[in-house]
Length: 193
Image (cartoon, rainbow, N blue to C red; front, side, top):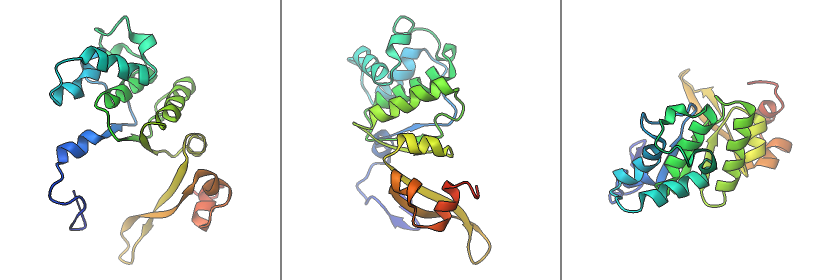
């Protein structure tokens, strides 16, 4: 992986291995047009696993708090699930390959409050075993589910181009109660954004 011309990982890093170690959960649930079982088994199969798929699928669905709802319908289409269930299925699909990091891009933005509660509870439970990075514009959600918070914004550079800017990173309680940067305070207090 390269950033501004610098090799971040060295020559011996396999990009396939990097992708395997990072699970991605998108804003809108994106189950594959397959059965519930095949959605969760997809990653292990791609990685060459042929034995023990039933156990892997079971364990991933349990960890994603979905097993009790789908255990008797694993052969049904993933599209038959509700939006919240589809999002938990996508989380289970990530967990099945045992990543080190889960990246979640607005994982609750398309969900109702009950499904959001399920996903937030799940994130707190999974945080014991995984590094979870969540992108959210929902300030209350960030305060509820995160241990550390980074505030990022877009600014104009000298040439007038929009560039991303990391403004402040700290423990979540500090960001929300005693931010150092006035831009963070303004965003947290709702005076802009």
